Image 1 (cartoon, rainbow, N blue to C red):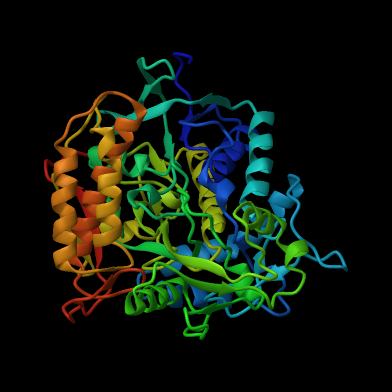
Image 2: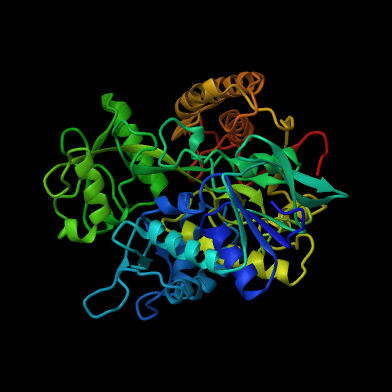
Length: 523
């Protein structure tokens, strides 16, 4: 790596990070570096099946409808301005992807094929290859980044944020050979994705260990809404980690959920939290580890969903004939590092976009196929703000409540005892112990007793030292993020959105936002 200071250092190579890198380098002419702990194309975006939700057909849809659907699913926790920004700017961002070479599915007349998914009141979801949207978008963005002047550093693990004089000045890193170093930057964009690997049953890739959120928490940067973990209701219940995802688009095309007696028991196009809880409850009622997704009524399933059919064939299933065993799996973290509408965080020089961020667009539960849209819109906005010389956050979006010195009644601070790990991690053999505890105690349904048990396990994992390997560092990050998540979940005594309590009370009568930070006043 060069010793020079880049204008923008992007951490992560998913849709948010790469769209920002393309903009910053190609359009704004900034000196950009991209750091990723895997290869450039190895990001959670590649796994996304559902598509991109955007208002393409204004004759049958509108941004007001998209706004209303998002707010409804978000259960009172969305930031209206953030959602309005996303749905208004989304169609143009999708158009740019097409201009860059993205090949989305089209009908016989050449128009974009628009699917409908749970929680949407209109057909507005753009797909590629039926269920290979993420892979197509990742292909386009990787090609675009390699065509710019951005410097790409692969297989480099970002350890912690470098903070000097109250500003983010870069990151400390672990190189592929195990040596440690520093990458200096005038601005750093966290685009590291989510933390699905907190759970033993997840659709997220092995790399989704919450690294960016953990770095932010250790640096004292405000994070929020971490208790809202969305569980996808139809992950394929086979012995694979991560679990293969059965796209929601199939339910939009007529696939139905059946219990072990073959009976339907839920509206398949309800929001994901509703469907996941219904599936989980039915499984608990009969002591089953899966239910069934019946796709036999979907027309031309092999032609329309070739990637899904190929994946199922690999495990001996044919969706045209067989009912598919499914169960909920951890899928998406709705909260993260608090940002304003341009992606600025509470630490000057630090930005965040995509799943790592709490931009306010998801609230307590994400509307299907809004995640890729969020990454596109806010990655682009962050790049523009950096190029414009913005310094520090503005009181917009979720950040408005955090910056309110008078103390917004809807914002509650949660102090965390988070110790910086530096170059040391936690015992990597405890990863599965942590994951099992989170799945059983902080999963689709949780209560204070189960959360207290998880908190004890997390404390034990955090206190067990490991080495400086990537595996150990990832477990340390999972322990940090898990602790913040469980702390917020214990404080939220109600059920709201993706957070469901078996012991729910009426104590939380307003949509309070819990903001996590360190107790030592760092940041």
